[in-house]
Length: 446
Image (cartoon, rainbow, N blue to C red; front, side):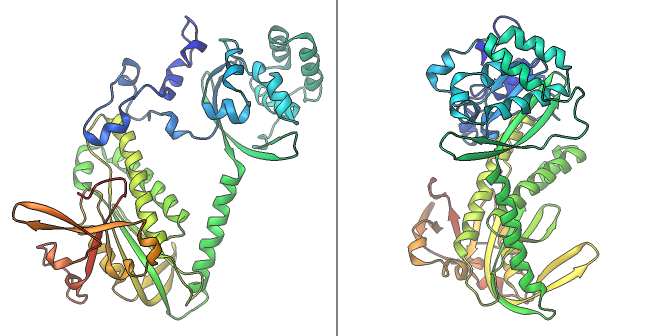
C-alpha cells in the first residue's frame, strides 16, 4: 500500500495504516505471550478507537478519499470487485484513482453492467461535489473515448444531489449471465469514506436464521401449558470478570460487555440457539427442536461452543492491542441435555423460556467451575452425539498420577471428584453428574 502514497503523506494514511497486514506480524503468537510491536502511530491512537486489521474485513473493502483516490483496498476488492490479476495490478498507476478501476478494460470485459457501477459511484460522489468537478476529474484521468462515455452517463444524473439515500444493493452481472449482489456499507471520515461490499446472500442468511429460530419458539408459544421437549442448554460466563471490571472504567467495561454479548448472541443464533437469560457476565442459551418430539442435534451445541471460543480469542487479541494489556477474554462454558417440561413466560420486556428441570442448573454450575475458557459438557449430552460424529470431538479428563497430570481421552468424571466446592444446590444432585472437558482438536489436552 505504501507504493500508492509516493513520497507525500496522504490525509488518510493514518487510517489506512490500520489495515496493513504487516503491522502485527506476531499477532498469531499473542496467546503464547509474545506481544506485537507498537509503532508510533498506533501508540498515539486513543483507547476508544479500535485498531483494525485485514482479518476483520474479509469482504471486499476500499478506502476512498473525497477526490476519489483509492487510499487502500484489500485483496478481496482487487479480485472480486475489479477482477484484477497480479499482472493487471502492476499496470495500474501508483496514485490509483476510482476512474482507473471503473474504466479498466478488464473490469469492463468481466462485468456486463459496468456502467451501472460507474453511475453508482458517481452518484455517491455527487453528494459531496458538483458535477462540474466530476467532469473535470474525468478530463484529467480518462482517455477521450472514455471521457465521452462518462459525460453521457453524467447527463443521466440529476443536477442536484439525491435527497434520499441510495439503494445499497449493487449487483454485478457477468457475461455468462451469472450475478452476484453486494450490499454496500459505508463509514464516513472527514477526508473520505470506507466502503465494504458484503455479498447479499450473507445478508439473506440472517433472515433464514431468524425464520428458523421463530419456528422453534413458535412450537412453545402455541402451547399455553408447559410442553415436554428434549433440548440442550449452553451456559456461558465471562472469565476473570472481577479483574476486568476492576481495571477498566465502568463505561469502558460496559462497552466491552456490549460488544462481547453481541458477538456471542450472533454466534449462538448462527447455530440455531435461542438466548433465554443473560445477566451481566452470564448468559443461558437453549437449543430447541423444530417441533416437540423431533430430533435435535447435540453436535451443533458443541460446535457453537467451539465457535464462541474462537470468536472470543479474536476479540481478546483486538483488546490486547487496544488496551495494551495481557488479559485474555474467555467465556467459561457448560453444556447439558434435558428432556423436561418447558414453559414460555410473557412479560413486559418480551418472552422468557423457563425449563422446569435441572438441565439449566447443571449447565450453569459447569460454567461456574470452568476456568480460563474451558468447555465442560455432561455425559448425557455426549451420549447423544452419533457415533460417527464423535470422531470430530476431542474430550476427556485429566487424572493425577503422583505429581503428574495424565490426560485420558473419551473419559468422564463425577463433578464431586473434580472440585472441592460443596455448595451445589441440594435439590439437584449436581455432584453425581458425569461430565467431561471438550478441547479444540488443534490443541493438545491441557
